[in-house]
Length: 124
Image (cartoon, rainbow, N blue to C red):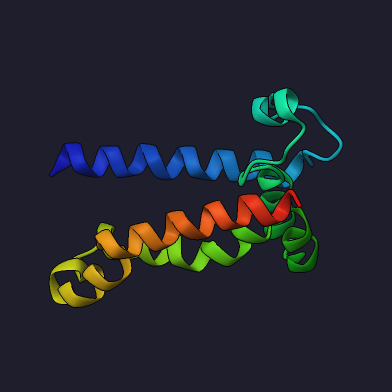
């Protein structure tokens, strides 16, 4: 139990520090991380392109700008947060049908299909 609490504390601290980094340093103006290798090689935007800038805008509650940078990130954030809540609490045992519906094999295939469609349509 102590080890689990330590692990959660480390993850939480890392998330806070990363959040502060994205809050104070706008990736549109500061080059803290490398450019997308896929975009550099092909000229096409991958599904994650614009994610750093969108994260910065979300932390400043600029939803319109965040959506302009990466709509997939903004739309999928509630889904990801629900999964985090479901798996980090005892809710997965209380709501097994919800877990299966949202994160079962069929759901994962639908999510992958949506990511592929986003990739295709963003590069047309």
